[in-house]
Image 1 (cartoon, rainbow, N blue to C red):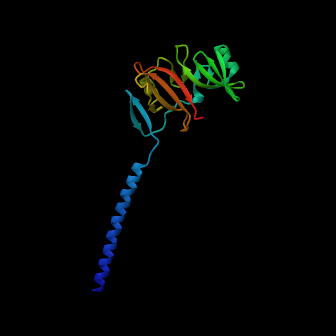
Image 2: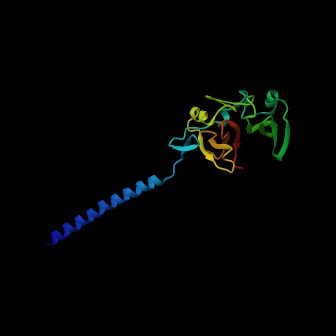
Image 3: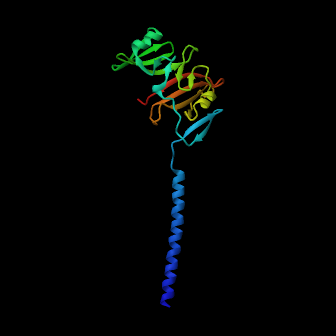
Length: 198
């Protein structure tokens, strides 16, 4: 009789152990499914489609304005190609803003760092490996040429006038981003800002 009792207790404990393993497996599956992942997006006709890989970006150190001016360049070099700035304004004691016909730079002594481009005419464009960004490129074309570069769309009160998207500035996922503005009707690029979380 005692051996039957011991066998019953062992069977009961084995059954409990199997049930606990199943429950733990379900919990792990749920936790894994709920764990947020870094997701890039692919925009097609103003909708977001999640993509699992993080390979798209527009590297700030690989772009060139009109094929000759780097993201970070000397004041003398920029003036050689664009002429004197239209205006200068101080932001703080460390730098001032320089405006060149739709281009905004921050000036630190003799160094200029790009902050914004207005693609007012076809005379202003950015060269990037595999791509030329100008007022002729559409959001669909950018998506096609640089898959996974667009992270997401940004909302706002003027969403019926423009589409605003964000893109990474390099392989590393930093707080710095490109903000690209496209006309809502034509989907053509008209502005590009380098956004820094100040």
